[in-house]
Length: 139
Ligand code: DQA
Image (cartoon, rainbow, N blue to C red; front, side, top):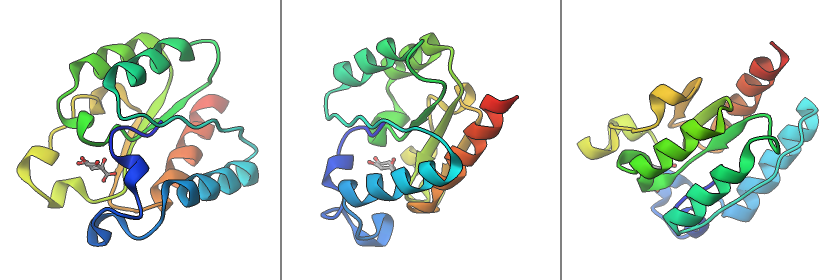
């Protein structure tokens, strides 16, 4: 699940986000998932309520969640509450190294609900997330 402004990848500061578009990122994630024997579905929105409602629908439909909520990560208790409701293992991913940027990006309201937090690895972070969740599901 990609949150706010992630549809603008390719136009965002390449020093933090590299040059890949969301379409290219999802293509790479699909390839990795295929390699790992996982099935992935994608969702992106710039509307917080739509992100929340997608989380509401996930229980029973998905085994796990990889989410990059973008800036919502840092303050959306609504997304936090909805994530908690899913009762699914989740990994928080950030393309950029959020701990090495502005102070407000260091705080996440979802980290303690997630089995792992991956930051600053670019698109490769999604591979780590899928591998981690594959282990989690297998247990
Ligand atoms: C981000 C980091 C957030 O701080 C930022 O607001 C984003 C993207 C990342 O992938 O590095 O939109 O989640």
